Length: 309
Ligand code: CP
Ligand code: NVA
Image (cartoon, rainbow, N blue to C red; front, side, top):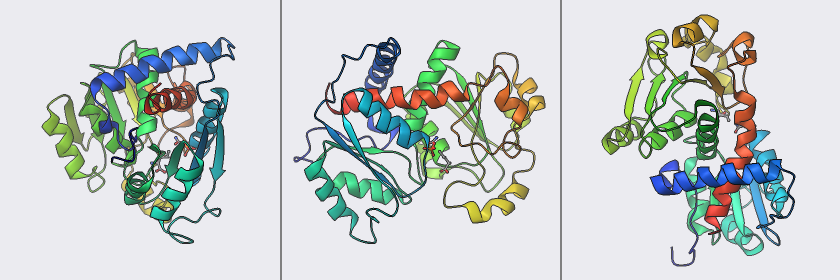
């Protein structure tokens, strides 16, 4: 795109290994700076970000808005009723209008095509804050959290238990770039998108397993990872899914099978007592809150990269 010298972040695989590594290193540095109370690093001074949300959010909204503010910028929240993208006006018009006022656009949408359209027609960098297909910012924050707690990211065994959803697609794309052992244990019929699994396997970088037995899957895990069984937009299927996902709850017995070094992670929001028990999410090896906090630090570094800073 000749109009747009700076890049978008729509999928983990938009970045190569060197870029992911650089972003994670910068996230650690900027996190340390912010934690030290140093208020002098203001690279986003004079910059504005438009944040489009067609779905609810706590982490994504607050981590982007606060992170952008802490680095000197100003963020504008546009909720589901504000611009009614695709309804009040077309996505390609929204993209061009918002590009006229802002230096960067972040969006959380239903259809993945909507984020592709925002990026295609926008003239400023566009960041994917979750679509029905993927959630790349989450998995960048997860990688940062694994580095901090396990001591490394490469070569770790990450076992996801549950629905083969947007989170899994971003894990698969991460595994197509960074060598890890990624296992998704899901009920039959809830496997991740086949083309994405194939892409990850074809990359030949990581060991990828898509299985149906959580007990076998978790053995030797560095991380046992969970997400809701019914994602945003699927809530009317919740009771049907509840039946189909029996046996996939992460409880203490499953964490024991995983072994003593396993951490528990969850992108949140969690439904305690459904995909994970209260005991597991409250256990000392649960790192869900540092994981949530790292959304801000990972995204700050992603934005610095997109601005070429
Ligand atoms: N994990 C995550 O994206 O949370 P929100 O839906 O609250 O933004
Ligand atoms: N899979 C979940 C992730 C929420 C952050 C959803 O899409 O609702």
